[in-house]
Image (cartoon, rainbow, N blue to C red; front, side, top):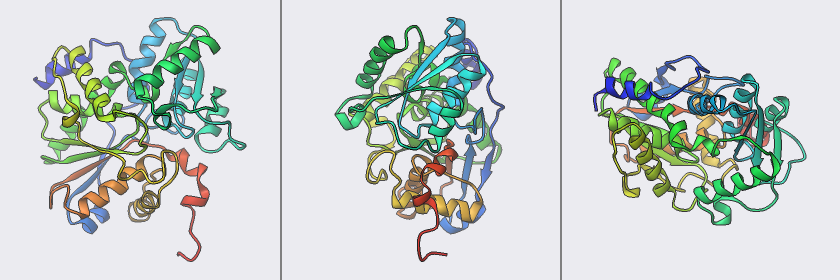
Length: 345
């Protein structure tokens, strides 16, 4: 599909501008020297309200629909340190809507990291002390249905946003991002690069997969699972990527086998708990490049990138782009993990 035609299709859908684009695509010179290959970072971490992050690209489409429907309340859900929940709360407040956030966890004794910012934004937080999501053996779709039911009971009329903005409409934001990134990469002479991204709900990966495929890009997306959260995760991403293509007028079904996802390998103990590999990776990024990752999402994804590159799983000298999706507030929820360990400089 010609790129100009794809841009025209995207313009058919209402969108609220909540951030400035394009986000930078920057080289990582010291990490490139360490790995012996060109390494770049796409800076989606600093865009949008309330300390920023990639979810603003999805919220631009989702909240445009909410506004058109006259919604006064917005509902979404996620993990305790969900960047999506925090950004939904901030964007909703910017538009005069009341945010309601659902968490399948007990209410913590102390509000730290993203939870503290949610509280500052006046989000109504609903803590559900029984299992949901993958730990309860549920698919993503089943969990979405459960939260929809609870929200009808507890919130009343509202506009519902799935976890991570996981919907075809929200993921149009990452079709736009895919086209933006492809243009930047070509401008720098980057061909055939892997684009590595954290995969929590898989929506960002689905949008990239659809956008890069429809746009005929040489870039290759690769998701690093950061949660072991959902049954049938690759199939869920494949369905979503297919829905995105269909709504853009270019039906293109995907199979689970076509989804470029590394499942479970780099999660560590479980979702929401920092892993030793992820913590080491975020320290390395901070000390070599002065860029902050987070311990729940991007730290684990970058650990995956480093390991795959060192083992030759990303080729030998091909360029690699790391998509930084944000999450810096999460650092402040885990000082005992990301602070200086005893005995280390």
